[in-house]
Length: 213
Image (tube, rainbow, N blue to C red; front, side):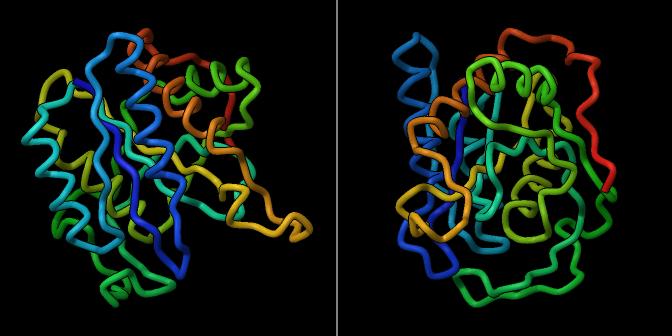
């Protein structure tokens, strides 16, 4: 079973392309013969991880790909590392705004994605979808879920998991606003590409995809 997740809208937005893309990617994977399900998570500290844990318990997936929105980024961000820190710049949808709090008290400082992020990067680029390996998932609810996901599956053999950020959809930006966006169809295909690459890749590529800052 493959589990994909996206978030409800937040920050005054009326849509969140991460949820639409997760739902669409699950449909694409199902059509290709894979067992896949999509679950929408609340953009709320604590509640999001509880919803994710419930989905993990219900569906018992072997591969998990969570997605969130990173408005302003130009393409798909394959997140490499989740850190044990909640530090909200804006309140979540329940008004919570934790500052310098751990996601998991006494948890490790960080977890790395167990998906082949560099192989996925290569596959996305080959498909003509703008993408990068990102070294930071932020400190908002996306990183909160990413860390919670990796902590939840850490003792479950054979389960691989990770997180990607998608940019704004075209409906969220003005045509002349100078803010990057990506068509929903490309975001949907991107998530499916990441999953298909993970299913076909036992060991990640050894290529450079780092950053100088």
